[in-house]
View 1 (cartoon, rainbow, N blue to C red):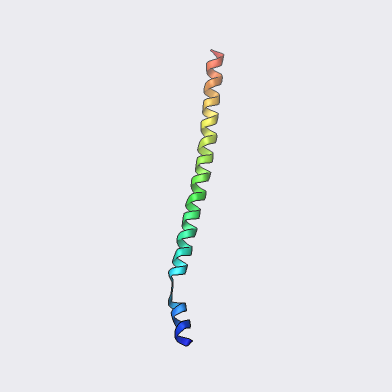
View 2 (view 1 turned 135 degrees about the horizontal axis):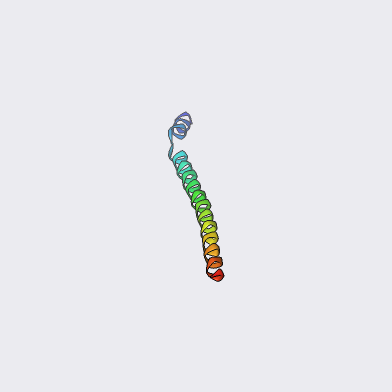
Length: 56
């Protein structure tokens, strides 16, 4: 039982998997936020361009 507990404490593969999962989720959130901001900026730019073309 003591040997089993010692192996469990030394095993870091679960912690590594959790770390990779956290990194992947943070990258995903950053992509979503960046895409949202880019979409808003593009929408504003095209709206302004369309308004300028209507005015001429």
